[in-house]
Amino acid sequence: MDNSNVDKSRRRFLTAAATVVGGAGAAAGAVPFIATMTPSAKTKAIGAPVEVDISKLKPGERMIEKWQGKPVWILRRTKEMLADIAAQDGAVSDPKSESSAQPEYAKNEYRAREDEFLVVIGICTHLGCSPSFVLKDSDNTPADNWKGGFFCPCHGSRFDLAGRVFKGVPAPTNLVIPPYKFITPSRLVIGDDSEAV
Image (cartoon, rainbow, N blue to C red; front, side):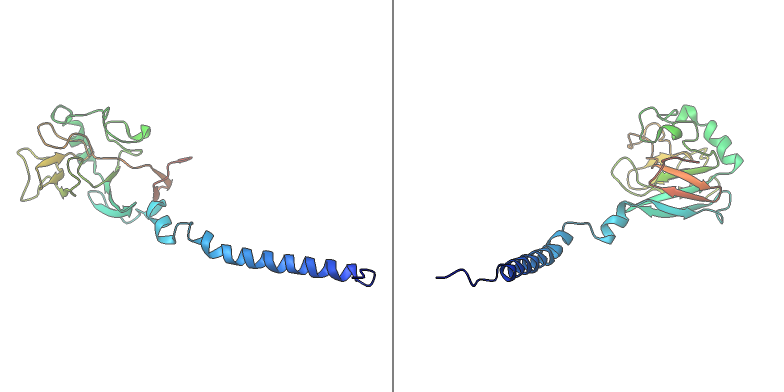
């Protein structure tokens, strides 16, 4: 065979074109495969920080938000509620929150960044039930001299208005405080406490 008539530039062009088309096909075929490895929008949203507007929350009221599939309670406490928390140090198991789960900035008497606002995961630390919010002057208070707080009817665990567990109940620790920060006086982010205001 005589190779003297072979057009080498055309051969190079055809080889390059075949390589480009083959590479594009391989890349196009890999896209769906790679896409299955990235988390869905729903999955990302479950763990994503949640921004909450608390501007309409009045003193003594609680609102519930969802973060990571868990209920997060935001309670705006009155001055009377804060005084009642301080008066119950002797009745709770872990008054200084030394053996409970919370960020360092919530390791204080009120378990909060700002005394007025409690941000707590609304799941009992005993078996994962969701306690009820029971005010001081409610008809069905769970104990004598009840000053308000959270009551888990499943097994009788009680928590004060700082989420601190009372002595003698099944729950072993205080309610969990999630990471959070205030981005303005009327807005907070649950699930992110970096560079907090």
